[in-house]
Length: 121
Image (cartoon, rainbow, N blue to C red; front, side, top):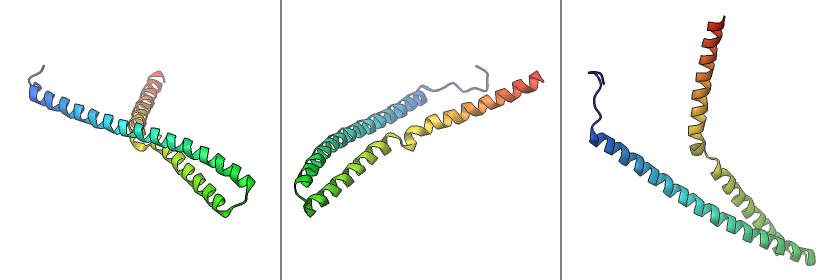
């Protein structure tokens, strides 16, 4: 340790740990909530698909405006659920860190490549 460096105090290390622990707990809670939502959406999707098949069978037997309206409503709900399931799996928050790491290491690779090329010339 040089004379310019400050030793880390035990309280700042404890604060950093508590902050990291609190962030981890928040992430875990968010993950649990997302998992519960995915489970609920998946169950609802299965129920709607089953009802969709029933309505289609009934529609073949009798042409009813109410059945056609219900069919459209079910299809709309299914599209919404599928969109929710897909969109929440890939959010900017989940891709932010890997994106910036790729930018950082890709840039570092370019710099190293330029240095090696200039040394080889």
